[in-house]
Length: 175
Image (cartoon, rainbow, N blue to C red; front, side):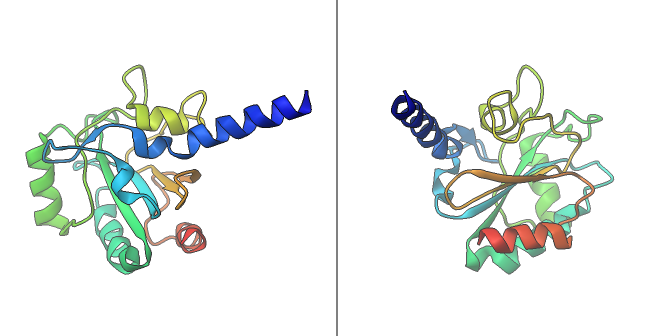
């Protein structure tokens, strides 16, 4: 019985290990993609919005991206209009805003839902009922740190700035 239980736990763990890479996404330009291009890197997923009090975090996220890109960190921005309707624009408008106002060079994806019945499967696999970091995203600029192995490590809320010691410590440990 213990052997069967151990085998089942190993199978479930292995099944999850690659799941963040397997979800279909569209980049900000509408091209089909996934997170598979980032296998072996540390990923910081952020649900972003252009008209939010936290929008200035784009600057810090870009600084993080530039500082740690060569060490294996990739920031992934996921526009979301679920919090106060603060991301109402099209992908083209979002891309223009991010590049012109903040010089964003990290990967941006098409607009998704991170909560509710239409939650994107990527977020569902991480924060849904069966995910390792259960619980809804509370607001724009929520952050999820994914390890080099593709497994979620930790969540950070909107109040955690990109330059916070707690976030930097977690990123450095993951790298």
